[in-house]
Length: 111
Image (cartoon, rainbow, N blue to C red; front, side, top):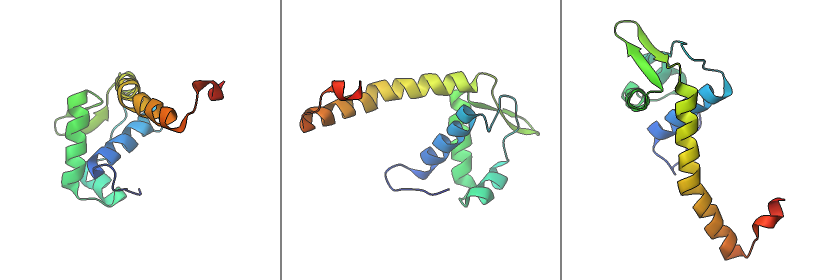
């Protein structure tokens, strides 16, 4: 996994993880790699992965079965879609609109 400076690493990992759920490579009910396994796989400290898992657990995307591990929630896809749509509409669209206005572009170019 390649990281960039524009966003904290744990958020980039969370985004990558959520993308896996949206694309179907991680299915509802499937087991998630352990913190140590995933950290070794992507080359980051397990504490960083734990931060990701805590965030995704708080959001309801994954859940922990004590002693067994983490699993993808049944409604993870819907949670991610709702969250990302809200973020897109409240943060990204206004930024795109501002940029289009600055450049003198009209939305008609997309039609």
